[in-house]
Every structure is written in C-alpha cells, then in structure tokens.
Amino acid sequence: MPGPSVQSLAGLRLAVGVGAWVAPGLTGRLFGLDPAGNPQSLYMARLFGIRDVALAIGALTAPADARRRWLQLGLLSDVADVGAAALAKRDGSVSTPVALMLGGVAVGAAATGAALLAAE
Image: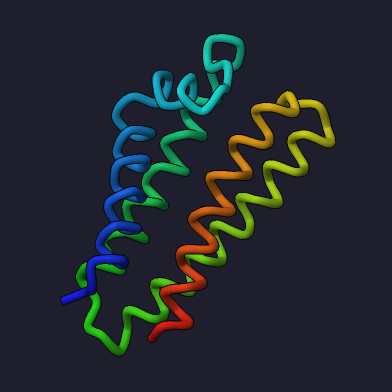
C-alpha cells in the first residue's frame, strides 16, 4: 500500500487527468488556456489527461519494488512539462502568467515526486 504522500500526488494526477479527459475545455480554461480559440487543444488535453491517469494508477497499484519506477516516470513527465511551459512562453503560444502557472504546477509536482523518491 502506497504511503499518504504517494496517494496525495496520485490523487492530484487523477483529478487533473480525469478532468482533462472528461472536460478538456473546462480544464484548459482552469489552466488559463483558450480551448475555444484552438479546438484541437481538446484532443491534446485528452492525450495529456490519460498520461496522468496512467501514472496515478501505476503509482497506486504497483508493488512497492515497482512503485519507484512509476514515480520516476511521473518525475520525468513533470520535468518535461516545466520545459513545455518554458517553450510555450518563448514561442508566444501562452502568456507569461499562464506559463508561470503551468510551469509552477509542474515544478510542484516534480518537487513532490523527487521528495518521494528521495524518501524511499
């Protein structure tokens, strides 16, 4: 059984992932994006959403010896998300406040995942 911190991180991943899959427009707007201005973003949100759902389920259900791998994969994804926010700011596809919010969420998740890995 994963500890409460793993459960918390996985719970956040599930909430964001299910939200992005079920209501990609609403989730995008909550993250400061403009799904109405880019209807293809709904498809991309669902791709992102299922990734977070898979990472959460893996971390919650894997045996203890395999949980570390799921946490590492989550950390990799979160670090890549920080990079994606920076690239989106640089190419002008998102504003500075949106990039900071998106990147900040990813930094928080990455820091949590790194702390969990260090504690194992």
